[in-house]
Image 1 (cartoon, rainbow, N blue to C red):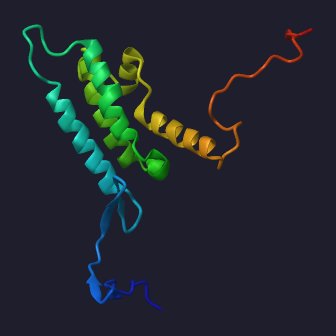
Image 2 (image 1 turned 180 degrees about the horizontal axis):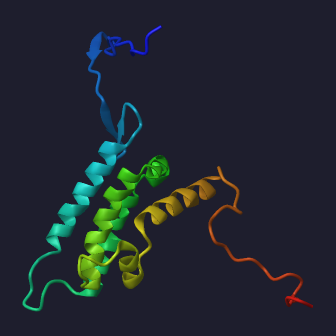
Image 3 (image 1 turned 90 degrees about the vertical axis):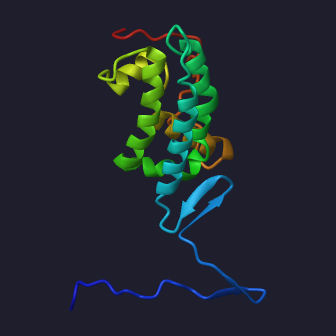
Length: 176
């Protein structure tokens, strides 16, 4: 017995109304790039490049050193973060892979450095605390969980914080 993988022809001859359909390795559907192995690598690359281009526009030089803290934060929360979160319920599971998470974190880190007016040596966790922004991989998972709750595929007592009413109006003190 051999360990060699068989190389079979992967091309299929598919016809629709007597017209040959071309086989592709990836396609864009509703703004999400889906590849044939469902790795979403091209989706992450496309989104991060798009966000880098938007961020490059924010580097316009003013005499006092660029856009203000408030303007940069608005650019991130209104322009970049929605792009990063688009379709998150579909591809959120791929963040288990470190390489995908790093690509998304790099984009957030670039804008966090500018918002905080910090040095490049500051850690990403510290930058998120200074700017008051949730790390992007946590925000993506939160968005996916919220979608599952709203759509009814997950119980409401899931990992999302929610208010809890007091027990019969009485407060229990420890040790009593």
